[in-house]
Image (tube, rainbow over the protein chains, first blue to last red):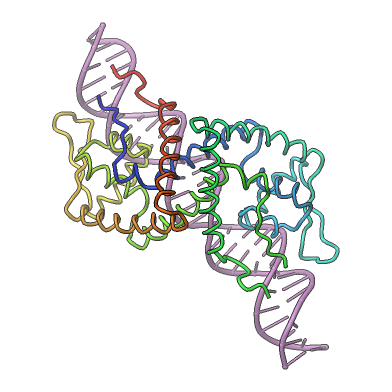
Length: 158
Length: 158
DNA sequence: GCCACTTCATTGGTCTCGCCAACGTTGGTC
DNA sequence: GACCAACGTTGGCGAGACCAATGAAGTGGC
């Protein structure tokens, strides 16, 4: 029997390894199912931010969604090409573009909402509802902690 | 104040998003600090498997560590170039290479062990010891569940 | 009013990681 | 001897997270 899949002990107990495994699986689900819906992760993030916070500049979108400025450009190009989003110059600040979701964009987003909900369900399948709560709580704590510790831009709000 | 980093609600509560955020941060820590030690993730995985299970073929290494065959080749090339590992043909099966860790490889591995331990510490900083236990437990459950559901190779061990 | 600093959108890279297809070689089975 | 499975290797892909540089445009201090 050559097919022994048991990983080294050093890895089995390491949070970074576990997180990575789960993330890889989650990523697999997201890319597969979003691809079936003609989308990818960045698209959902941007559409979600636009739908919740209203039209905004690209830089703002990037900040909210954790997507790099340059990647925002590319993702918005793709979204605009599919008429899910519109770029228009900001009259009050000519450096900026104001990005708006089109009605089709909103439709697409709510479809993706459904897809994503199913992904959560499948991902957390082995966990009971209170366990899922707990997992969310723990992960949120970690995220918040490290977000606060990462300036990365606009460190001193003047 | 334009620097509003609050993410969309749809994302904040989604396990897949949280996992991804934590994984991204974890990945950042790993690549940065391993790079400082002249290594990367794959190297550690392979060295760990070799140290724990003894010399083995490349295919076996890949299975244990979740690294694709083709990526095992590349990573082993890098390790071999640094004399951390040795490739020798298996006399009993001429298709196989037998990979062995050198003493330098073991040294390097124990150094990386330290680096990785510190990463776990930093990553889980906001969590109490029992909370870390719980996180590990929950993540392990998810990993085990999905591993079992993924044949991916050698489905029927004959 | 001018100059320095910052922000913005955009271009064009890099790197890791996960994965897939194909090839030639070798082993094991029928 | 024919077939199929496993092995190592090469070469490629796409997603995601980055980084550096550029030109245009706003902002503050003096």
